[in-house]
Length: 624
Image (cartoon, rainbow, N blue to C red; front, side, top):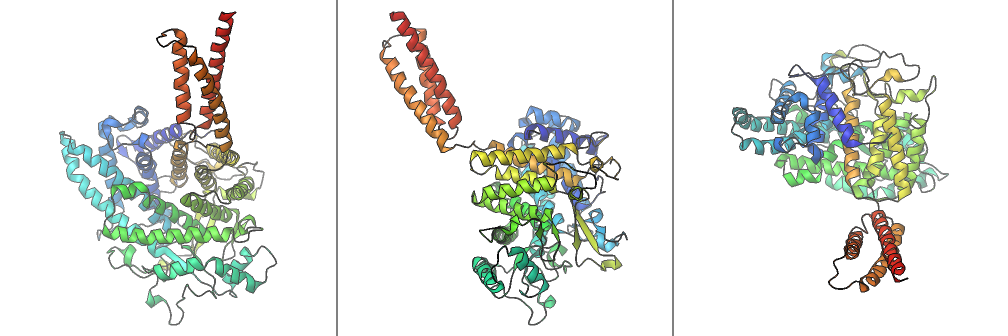
């Protein structure tokens, strides 16, 4: 299925409004009910494209594109769109601000129990990394929208605009408070896990990394050497919220620089038990004790990296949206972002002969294994390559994507009883170690049904790299297959038609056809389309071979044109002279775009040669 991000995003906007905005009111919730994460995902489906894609901007009502205005026609006239979005955003902030005036991030209905016992009220209020990451993305999008819309309402004289002028600063302040708390939560959820090599966890890490007959001592030495720079960087620079001395027994605090230990880094499912407080963040996200097991989860690490990517974008720096405390937190997150993507990119490709990542499925340090984990590590490898604008080992990574797409039944057929179906519904099950007993409740788990959207997003991201044509074609084919897979699971009927997803379409599914959308899946499809819009907006590839062929044609065409101009009299105003001028303009344009669009330059040169040959033939025929 072709990916057409502009049209598909507009279709998504129509579907979001048809479901969410009824009878002039915004309706929260979907299949999983209403919670701080699901509601943020629902609102992001509108705000994220509006702030990431210039063609979809909504902060200047007079400049809204006609197709965007038509897609949002349920909101009414374009002059009303900004005010409605401010209302919806303010409602979200009020819903998820506590009586103490501080933001809260409870995962609520997204949390499930292992044995079917309902989670306790205290457990429903647990905050997970998804809560923080989605809030970071939502707050950044909101601040960008509010910054632009505030400039617009300052120039308006209508009563509604004057009221908005008073409200927008208050809403912006609430958004900023929520952003600070979410950033603090992400900082305190980061962990560096340093097991002994002979421990069960250490042996699990070494077993996954070992892809040859290298002795264990030599393997450990090689690993320590490869990770030395990361150890030094982590030991010298990570300070903020790294350890709570009250939670670390005397003599057990680990020095990351100790190369006799293994280490892995990333994000746990929430604030970890060993996290210290952040004294300049007044909300509980900066000070409350953590519950999460202090070891990294691959799923939550990829989620955190996505949120931090939004925070670290060039536009955020240009707009100067962050205050002093947020810049401190942003620097801390940027360091953790670099450590995590570099660590997993290194571990994934540790052995040059046969990568650990090629040994599918990936096994985690708690000895769980799944194709989903292989995809998560691949995703972090792609993030590292994109961040460094590198195509190093991209071809081998694409081959892994291709294998995972087949194993995940994206490019192959689901069969009756196929275990791969669980990757898509209910998704990989993650045990939230440390959640048991909170408020007397059972141990909790989390479902991650985003295999197809993760595949699509990373393929589209990788296609933005300046790689060769064959690799880009492979990535495009995989992305289109993933988009086709997702299209098969779009809701086709009812109020939620055009949203995602319909797991009843899986073979042997006992799930009834849902009437409500999954904002978890729908929001991630939206992210994929925004990423595709960015990739498609970049210049096309310019292979050296194509440039060389275009140069050869241009050289011949310009030489023949010079010869043709020798035959034209100085004051000639004939159609023949006009045609010569047009050929000259075409060749000038071909020269200008030669290194950006060599194929187009080649076509222009080819057409110029044809036109010149026709002129030469006509002249020869006239002379006869």
